[in-house]
Image (cartoon, rainbow, N blue to C red):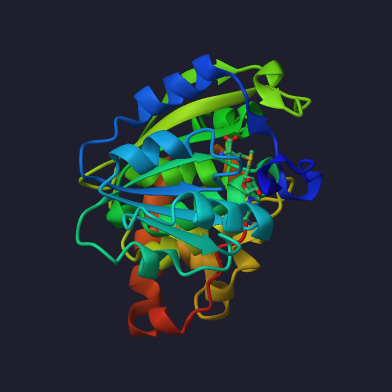
Length: 283
Ligand code: SAM
């Protein structure tokens, strides 16, 4: 059967084989009867059977064509299950999640090699989400809870922290997977907030500010900001003065509130030109 083919390292295929961990993830997901659920990377279906039974609507996005075909066959009689044979980084998530007015519950044991990029994409659709339960490499999970001015504090900490309350559920050891990864993993709950943790002005601007501040960790904040697209239109010295933030600091020392102030001022200074600024979502 295709689902038993050798796991592909290139697709981060470390399949869950520990029934206890599978049960705990399902419990943490708190799927409500009839809820719309998205599973990214269902793999051999460790979590999928339960989701298919309990979700009102289940969308599976799987990049391994053989596994996607296997899921399509498995669920061919279940109208509530849709299999998307595609790269989650290439699909239009906002479009997929607009299929129903309900908010979505996302469940995923993410492939390590793309987990940060997937987090950015899920951040981009935070307003369509009811909850997320994600398994990540422990180091990536630890970053999300890191305080300012430590090496783990980064773009994901600041962006995801704006819109989600993030709670560590439990740590998963390598022996719970086949094949075993080299590192520990962690399961996290992401609960979207009804209001952002801070007023950041334009969110595209906020993303650009945060990304530029972390773009060169050894450089000063002012030099990092100067490398951003928006710096072609505004004076970063004036910006930092207006915000009362010392440009000699490093970006990683800024709190969420300080990023919010910077973002509000950039939004203000760009004025109507804001939408002309080019932004990207990469790490
Ligand atoms: N959910 C299964 C489990 O817990 O056993 C599999 C998890 S495995 C860590 C990651 C899964 O994501 C694999 O099935 C892999 O094929 C799939 N995958 C990898 N890259 C992907 C991508 N870019 N888009 C969608 N799925 C991807």
